[in-house]
Image (cartoon, helix red, strand yellow):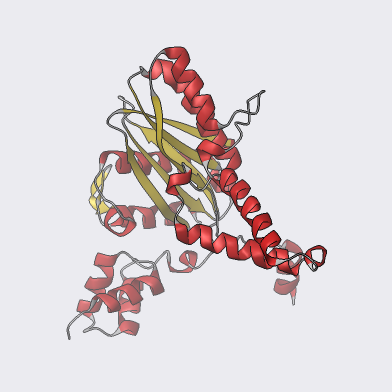
Length: 310
């Protein structure tokens, strides 16, 4: 029987085993999913099966930057508990993952998981992860990563709260790293604190603006205080609100949190560049927050004990 990619994917989701192991199991059982599950169990390759179903929404974000500051990686690796996230073994593992991403070429998670693990090339990244799950005793997940490059300048990292938030900020500049690192670290702290969605207003799509405008119009029309206002007044009102909102979601337009004179981030960077007699152009940023968008496990130990007694 021909083994399809869909069959391999289904078995992988059921067992948490590696893709190559799933294909081998299906080959050895003539494509019978149930028998393939048993084959993996018998060969000790589905040992992370139970753990793989648990919610992993804790963990840390790790960043690595090349020696010349022109290339960097950022990765989020999840665990089930904050206790494990603070474990030295877990943190060392995440650091090794970030190193491999920095020095590798994979552009997506699937291809990265299929790479040979740099510290033991006899296994893949995915197989090594399964081994770590078995060792640590919790479900773990390499959730997302990005590799960033800035050949005409520098990339500066920032880690907040021990890895709860990780940020990379890159800029094109003719200045030395020593001259601009403090400035870009301040910008990275701004990104961590204020969570902008875009770098500049030019990065905002018309689709995004249209959607936000529709939301603001609906809110305005549903507000009893605006019941007697004509449509043209409401239109002007929501346009003003949209412009204000767009400034809040753009990094360069945000009020710089450390400023005393209410200058925005773009103006702050320009003032540093002027002081140094050089140019500093922000070219991008990445912000990862651990567990962002994931459902967190609700620990109710009293209910758990009661259920066990019952």
